[in-house]
Length: 565
Ligand SMILES: [Zn+2]
Image 1 (cartoon, rainbow, N blue to C red):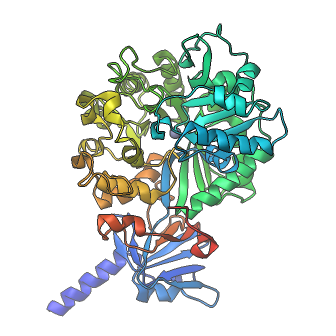
Image 2: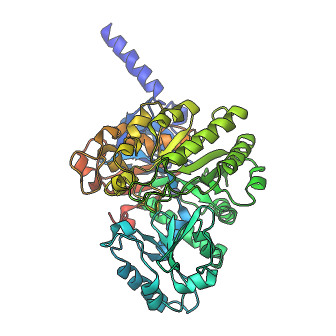
Image 3: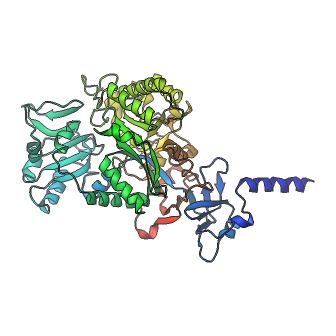
């Protein structure tokens, strides 16, 4: 009797796990066996084998059953105990910015203004004079003198090329004299709304431009060609695949770049799935009338179904809008990049047309305004299952933390920002406000999910750095011991979900990707180490061995280093 019960139990389990009936075991294209599979699917969290046919997962289960899908032309991969995860999702990054960072002067990790000038001068020497030299990635908080520079030394070293150097967070730029002249910026030029021209004691522009003031120069930089956009996308997606990423959310894209993505999707040239957020430009409202679009090109590679708006700036350049002044700059409480009224107009249009509304908010004032506007707009035009998001949700007043769950708003957060910023954030905002800062646990405990991401190229796209920060609240060197406000850590399971299933849900594509589940696209990543069980200080030893998108192997370790960690 007892053995019959056990047999029935086993059959029931097998049935629940998409047991291969004879007709379903037609050979697959790709079969992984002997893997430690973490599916991110609660109905079957663990497995040993996965089979993919025609781009989609057809089997998840034991290695013994997985072998049944191996035919003459099947690529069978014995993982010998290595870890297999769903393809990783970065819910918030900037594809062409990453591509341009790869193609332009890379300033990430520079430790002084002098070293920046050196790199820019070297690029200028090989660039026809008069042409723009652009770079990205500086961060004055990392310099020996952690202050905004003056353009004099840069202008002296590079007199004949206009120079535009974007800060690592994209919220400030350093330009030289030629660029200031090209833009017509002089001592009479007023600060634009939502922007600041930093000036010296004599009232002259220092060459540092904050938030909307960057537009004064950016508008005189010649538009890049479609071919350059395509090259930039290609450079970025190759890099992203190396990190095990199979889907991303592109956080603020103009119409022309969207058109290039569409051409590439139709031509089958995309190796990463992109959930595009349109940036709110002038013709936004007419664009919204087309309605949200999913699965452009038919391979599930491209959706254009969300809007990106920036309510405030960033913390590093003191542009994030705070309820009270910056602790290290009395009189400054940050910048609003759009008015609450404008955000409300966009919210009403989003509610009416079915677009998701993803709003950048970093400061506690920025976050409160967004929640207020979302609440009012959704009260007037209720949208069931709207999944509107706050991008970053970095500093929340404690009264606002439960409001996201109440309103059904999804926080889209970058755990790596905590690891990068923790050393200087207390000086910016003081200790009292740290309670609601990078408050993952406090948010999760209210019942929300968190969509994870890196904000690349603000940070490295490496999702393992985000995973490590999420579970340790430490930087990659393991500092500080025990973690920074460790009570806000995620569990390993939550950290996996925030880079997989929760990211899919937050992009409204959870039926297609986000877990290893029969019927979804065959998006998978093989890791050298089991990040779900190794000690904290070994998580970053893991290397991406292989990345699979829709059953196609887009990266293997033999193709080159997985990204410089
Ligand atoms: Zn961003």
